Image (tube, rainbow, N blue to C red; front, side, top):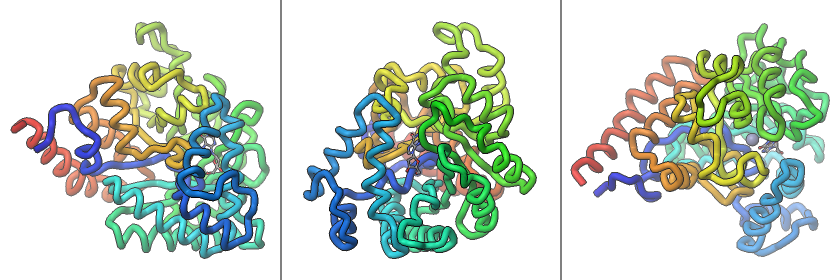
Length: 360
Ligand SMILES: O=c1[nH]cnc2c1ncn2[C@H]1C[C@H](O)[C@@H](CO)O1
Ligand SMILES: [Zn+2]
């Protein structure tokens, strides 16, 4: 039986799409502990997996993006060999499939995995192999997005890497890291290169910094999607009464917003889930998608993010279907492939759940 108000266990069965999830933010605590042991990494704050998982969640609850990002030191430290990357990617595919995700774009920064002298190509190939094997075994399609760190200067090189592997598991490019003080226009060269190559990219913007960051990401850099984009709310009047020109543009052009509610509460981009701009942006019919950002740091999954929204905003099956279709339409996958997933997997899956809910 399926209920009218979607319950967590039912949401898990729905065929979901995830566009914003960090590979180095989604490791299993037990895997971190084992890899640290195997590679002689002694910097972990806790050794027992349960305590380690709690440590990541608590340390990420500071209200500051900069502090939140410090926790990645530990995950990146144990992801420095092809075997470790392969394992983490394979387990990521397994965990997403267990949560009912049918298509995912998972991102990471290859430049952060060179400590033990892997080449950038070796990093990409190890991760791709893990996604391929895990995805095939558990029934989920996982593509990667290559991220360049916005405070570093390797974005052009990483953009070239993304283009080189575009037909081999890499769906696109992204920039991430501390937003304040590192505007996307620092990486204009990379974005112009990607546009000349007809390649796709998203930019973390409007998370820890406001409208200028979103405006640059779209109008100077040409981003296809916005990572977070929550601060677009600053261009919208009380209760959605009046949209400014940038908000109008984002909505009119159907620019996808990769929203990550729990992560935003942890970094202080939103006060609570109930106060999260996703409620208003959904009412105004922006192209909203729901995402996890970092499952480890937030102790979450895509199903749990949906369940939080159901609780806070009273969403029903038709809303969850709408978020999912928005995400699939916004994926960096060819049109025919997106359509096939929508027609053959997503619509039938949601219809079955909705019909069961109607039968009560
Ligand atoms: O929410 C985020 N905002 C900005 N940067 C982030 C966020 N989550 C993860 N990152 C960074 C830390 C990771 O090491 C890097 C690549 O996945 O991306
Ligand atoms: Zn992110």
